[in-house]
Length: 291
Image 1 (cartoon, helix red, strand yellow):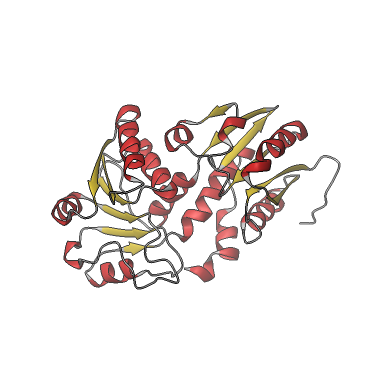
Image 2: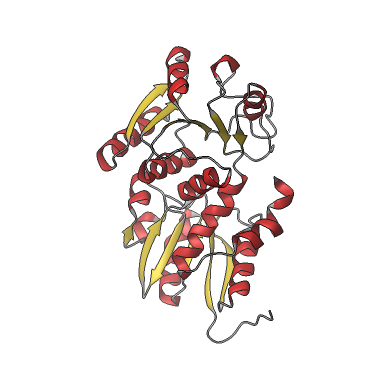
């Protein structure tokens, strides 16, 4: 359909630095056009030092909402009026909705991952899951998995700078959700083996194995894989990491993190508009060549 900027067109966008590489403007603007919504989505290169000013300007301009990427996901929280449960537990925001000047922060990263699990044809609800990592992606996935109904979540991390953060996340999940969470040292191979025997899904939410360091893997001992275990990696460059390749060779179903990006955007779109993103259109146009 024809599309024009009008006097009623509402603005939204992405804040972070850098942002020029993002495909979010294409995803959202094509979705607005497909549904006939008078909205536009732009990228704004904004670091934490100017974030407060920009958020206040967005509030005053009555934008419909905005996304945040690094390094603004945590820095934005003091400028918001309310946080969703997921954003509270994760301690980071990637989506803000503006309702008549009230800014509510959400985190759709975990929603995106859990939808990607379903899209790949797997069901982990009511089952046990092992999650590698303690960074932003791991926190978002852990919280959403707990909220959605994973029965037991095994967080696995190295003892180091992130260990206390992982411990705090585990405690928060146990206190605020019905999911039972625990924390294991990645170096404890025997404990990890026992966790994977009970788990339906293993997810790598670290950067280990990402290009250009494609020879690396967080699980070098391939004897830990069993055929009943689904193995996932949030990395999508390369499309098949060493972890996924070795798990597949052991008979494990596998999938990568490409559709996590699609579905976190879909969730943000629904928060802003109350409508479903035309996912099939966006998937075909921007993701089909990346599978």
